Image (tube, rainbow, N blue to C red; front, side, top):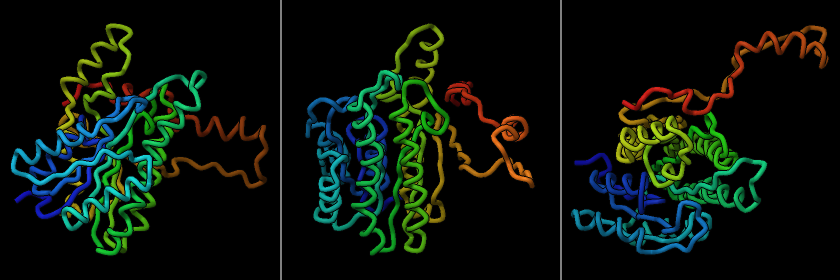
Length: 305
């Protein structure tokens, strides 16, 4: 028996990359799967296709599993409520949501349009809210449910040209944290994954020199979507009933637990602070604990294992 035997799982972005890997693996572990994908491009600005989600669902059925497809957008609460209802109507339940659906519109902030900002926020942050809001009451009523949301080291650490993506992904971190806190007494869990995997989104990274070409090639060969799916399915499983409100990363064969913001240093001045004394005393004393401006690749400079 698999770790999701008898469970029903909704997977967003299930037509490709991490979403497809999660949908296939969930089915292999006994889940009945609702595969959602709009079927659009990486930037989310072209017309979707219902065939994309159905192709994954058909692959699951061909392997002996149970799956249906859904081609609505996670940016619409009504559409996501329809996905939840579809799971209830077709399979008689819903026990976990795995939510890697996403788009990229990378550009430096001084060149970013409102449309580029709004589109990324709508899919990642609004989408995470929609998914959570649509399923959480059902989860609370049955006193069982797991959300597996996705963040990015672009937000946790930082990458150039991704203010929209980083802001959205850090927003999802906060959403997942409170979702877990509010759901604790009802056995509703929420965890979050920062994935390292070669997907069509990662394939859009510009290659400007030999160093970046080598980095992208290491990502392509050493960090696969199916490795991320192992962690996502584990978190969706009731076997992980004691795991909630955590931030993980999956990088090749590594599983990484991230810290969450907590105070690291405190300065007290009994007579009170002034701007001058803060600049002359507090900041210099705190500076050794400051976080540098290194991008994600400087925190993970080694090849994936």
